[in-house]
Length: 237
Image 1 (cartoon, rainbow, N blue to C red):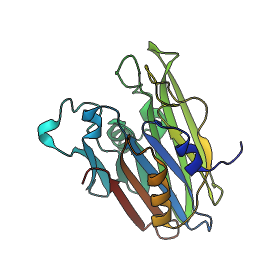
Image 2: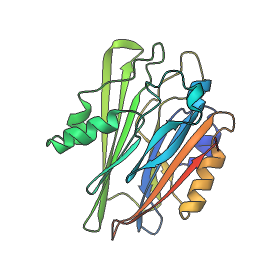
Image 3: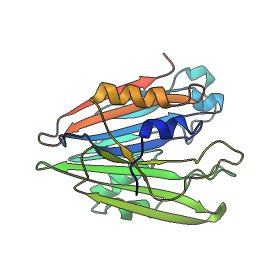
């Protein structure tokens, strides 16, 4: 698979929906993840990311305007020991809780399926980063409706060992705007990872469609020490 520019890919899609990027900096020193959310409705746009322990959660920017909290209020990022879990829904908690009981990332997601938001049936996208003993590997998953069938769920898991410096994997919910919204197709896109955390954060945020972007989370984890640095950008301030 050809490695493409993450920035250009985002600029070419007015509505990728929610997206997860996981990869490694060019010097091989830091594991990288980014998670962004976008919105078309006032309810979806009325959100911010806030810190929650070592992770984050979504929160209504204006509580008085919150309509339906289901599917939009959740913890996108949680940390379990050496694992950082990143998802686009409450399956973050499913992964965390079932791994605590001895199940794997993939096994835990067999208990879930796409979101019940007909006619879109938004895919559930998830990632897990494992940083320990100076090594880094990760997995990504997508649970999606089979051709819009609300009774058939296709589950795909992708594993990446010893990821290449300067490269990452990008998966998002939609191929673009539409009614219904077209679900993501294919395996995660191979993208370039570059810059320090501030450069990378600014590059991703600036590439997202101005009208639809809502919030962005970026974390750089030092592979040698496990220490991390985080950035959160919210359109609502």
